[in-house]
Image 1 (cartoon, rainbow, N blue to C red):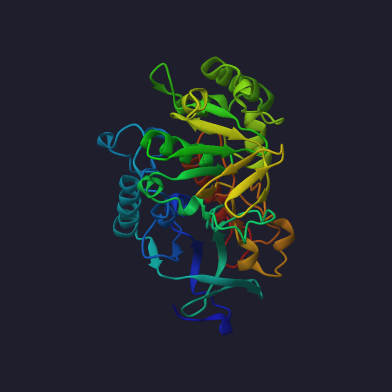
Image 2 (cartoon, rainbow, N blue to C red):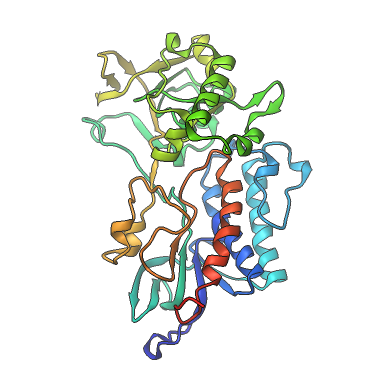
Length: 394
């Protein structure tokens, strides 16, 4: 990448950082606007975040709602596409964008810092700097795994993993496992371990309880109804979600599963916390194969103490406690930083006071993040294309 910052001629028209589902979808729609995006991807493949997921993973969104624009997913992949199949699809999609639409994708380019000088964004990477007047960060909301530091956690002798490093279920055979966190990732891990049936014991700790939805309803994937549900007012969405959960699972409070004070859809919008999709977890709780505990108070040498005074000995703790965006690491002291809540980014399609700078794909959506990104990319692309290369509106 040549460096033309000195003569104020940017190297690229539009740069997208990140070749995940958000970046790829946006690149497609930008090409429909007759503008030429360049994607910078830190890894050696598109959709690298999916590679880090555990091998048992299947999308919890229907195949119909998981395809990127212009290229449907094959029916042969099933209703809920497996991790490796989806990763293959994303890389085929990236190749298709490059070969048939002329989108430049540069792999192995790690963005370390961005800064703006004289109306031009300068992107510092592990290679040469590159410049542009239009910059989109599509690095995703889950760049940095987050684990709270309870008393004793760093000195105990319990094996600890974040959900990002969950790995194969076979690694938990004959072990006493505690999952911490009852949102989407925690329930997904619980489902996987319950189905494998190889742990000596299973338990889950939930600070605020959880919202649960069925993966299927009368044999039909319940998630396909989500786009229609989003057309309702938020409060009514909460009521429909609560009713569906109650009809499918009954009163979960008597099993120790509390309902969060914030409604299921409101919690997703305002806190970024997605509900769990049940695929064996609830049955395991009701039959005693999965024990439910409240929030953690502290860690001991080989056990965990909870806020109600109960104690549990365990071999492994899996923290499904969320992620951080890491955006402040990239933006530093730029003027955009006060407009970024890196701890809980409730991003709209453009969250910045800087012309020519967008943050895209950070907000979880009820209808599924992948489907939502394709819709949002279609709306955002004309906005980006409407900014002339000199930074002015046409």
